Image (cartoon, rainbow over all chains, first blue to last red; front, side):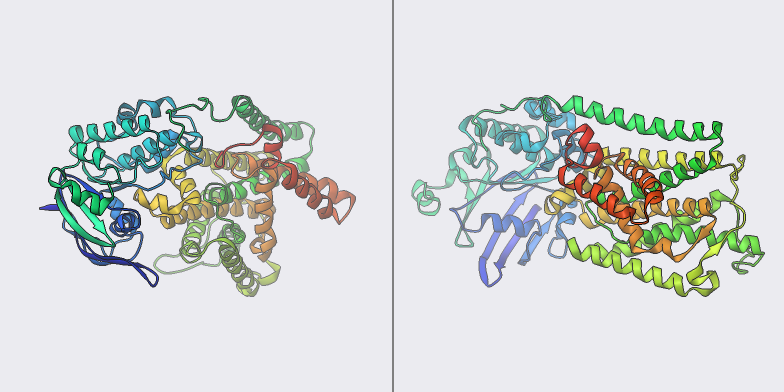
Length: 228
Length: 348
């Protein structure tokens, strides 16, 4: 049974419709890439799943209907979000960011420190004074502290320098290998997604137009839909 | 803000003066505490009971503002109706003690209850009643924010104020006098220093609770909800619940202060519900330092001292006080404590 199922999802920003029918399914322990060019509905799909905006269509997490739940209830069900643009609690320290989000489970401040040793070095530093890469690590750590079953990463490596991106991707690969956590990753880098994701879904103008194993995605199709 | 390299900032987030300034604040807090112990003891030895009463008044006001500081300092909730809880605490004492002193049953069913003159019972009723009121008021008002929240809490304050004025059974506009101060097991509460000891202990407990709260997950999440409620929801927390709990705790502490204040004066009246008093609680916090642990204490002590000294010089003493407040707001980096100890983080 799928952990997350989204069928015929539609959503609008006022009079402007952004999603026209998105379908995706993600099994427990699976890593799924959600891809598409800018403005094709990736972040809107994430917001709809996390109930941060109204939507129509079916959304189920572990069999539970998400459509009537407020966003914090979706998070409590086990959907951890690493939002676009990091968005840490700017005036709290690294440790305080982690403690504020903590829910019982295997992920603790110590295990986050093991995953991101640089965060441990900066535990007393306020989030706003961290570098972009460290803020991203903190955003991932904070989502892990909620001990989710599914972690959604929205453009987690956007705007980061190559070395930092590499470090983030390595951490995600470790997460996948060691924790069995399900991951839904929104990113533009097909090459890096291919190293970690089992399957992918491509959105085009608010619709899911391709779904399958990433190694089965032909180059000309990728070029047409993703511009790569 | 990618730097291309992880890390590049100095490990100390508060700059090179950080620890020194933090140390300065701790020293200031210790000095204030020391003053609150030494001055009343000196007053006992010098036979100056009025000084003890003055410091008791300051300590009770400080406790009320410590309560408000949980909502305002940690949660960013500017409540202009906190006198409601102060008044409820006061009337809890007044009603229970009035029935006990006049031998008039408060209720006869399911059991006969003739009120009480026991402080612990009165405090429990005051805390529970103000917590309940804060919960109900919070449930309605916390759905708004900003100026609407200020206005709705003010409106609740006025409702309670006019209700108390029209409550003829308990003195209406004239209020109620209680002839003898209520009792506490093992203490002579008529002795000013012993009653002061109780009030100081309550203040210390309030400060301890605040200090624990702001470092606990609840306090951190409350602070985070003030900065970015949508991010707090994303980690599975409901900002409304966090604020409601903070507002309820806050009201309960202010209610306890109200019960103590009524016992200090042995008198309760609708002025305990007045919006001016709610405003003064906010002023104590701003004067001392918003979100500073000892901000409300410093603010309340300064207010009571100025009320006493400037009030002896002129009945227009509020003008001088207003000017001081203006200077502090304009030039202080977070109240008097900020002036002395330097700027702190938003929730320090």
